[in-house]
Image (cartoon, rainbow over all chains, first blue to last red; front, side, top):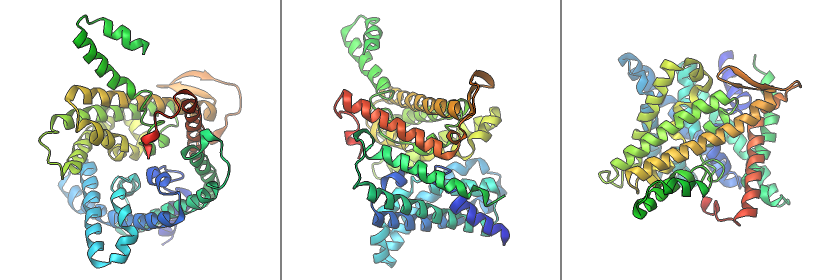
Length: 192
Length: 228
C-alpha cells in the first residue's frame, strides 16, 4: 500500500512526466494555449495512458516474456498503442458521442505522444506488478494533466503581457516551463 | 553557400553539377535552414532529456541519425508499393525495427551509454522528426535525396544536441568531458541547476529566443513560417 502511495506521489509530483522526464513535450507546447483544449487533451491522455499501461503490461508479461521475445517490445508496444487509440476512438464514437466530441480530436495526436509509450517502457524497466502498473499509468496521466492545466493558465495570462518579439510564442513558453519545473523540484525531497 | 561552389566544381559536367548541388542542398538544409530542433521545434522529448553531457548527446545523436538515414532509405525504396491508407502504420513498423536494432547494438557494445540514455533510446521511435521526415519527404522523393535528407536532419539534430549539452555540462558541472577525458574545467562553483531538469528548459528557451532574434533580423521570417 505504502509502495503504491509512493508511486502515485512520484509520478504526479516528484518525477512529473513533462517537467522532469520531458515526456510528451510536443502536446505540452502544442495544446497549452487555452485551458479548455488543455483539459480535453489531459483527460484523453489519462484515459489512454491507463489503458495502455494495462494492455502493454499484460502483453509483455503474459506473451513476450514466456516466449522470450522481449527484444520485440519496441515494435509491439508502438503497435499496441496505435491500435488501442484507434479502437478507443471508434468505441467512443459509438458509445459516448458527447465524450467523443470533447476528446475526439486529441486522440490521434496521442499515438505519437512519447509519454504514453514512456509509461509502457518504464513499467518494464521498474518491473512493476499489475496493480502498480495500473496505478502508475493513471497517476502519470494525472501528472500530465496537472502540468498541462497549470501551463495553459499561465499562457492565457501571457497572451496579455508584453513579451520581447524574439521570445514571443514558443521560447517564452519554454522559460515558463523552466520556472514551473524549478517549482516542482521542491517536491523531490518527499520520497526517499 | 561557399561550400556548395567548391563542392560542385569538382565535377565538370554542368548537368551533373546541378544534381550534385541539389543533393548537397538536401544535406545542408537539415543543418541550418530547416534545422529540425531549432527551426521546426520537433523531437523535443529525447532532446532535452539526454542533453546533460556531451557523451550522451553524441550517443543519442548517432542513434537518431542511424534510424533517420535507414528509415528514410527503406521508406523511399518502398514508397510506390505502400498503399496510401495504411502508410503510417507501415512507416512506424519500419522505424521501430531500426530503433530496435540501434537499441540492441547499444545494449551489447555500449552498456554504460545505454544505461545513461535509459528509456529514451526506445523512445526514438516516437520522435516526431523521424516520422515527420518519412511522411513529408521520404514518401515523396527518390532514394538518394531521401537518404541525404535523413543524414542532414540527423546531423542537424546531433549538432543542436551538442550545442545544448555543451552549455548545460559546462555551466552545470564546471567541466567538459568527452569519452572520459577531461577537456576543460573551470575553478568555480558550478551552477547545478543547469544539469537538472529546469536547466534544460531554460537553456532551450533562451536558445530558441536567440535563434528567433537572428532569424527576424536576417531573412524576415522566411523560415519557420509554416511551423504551425
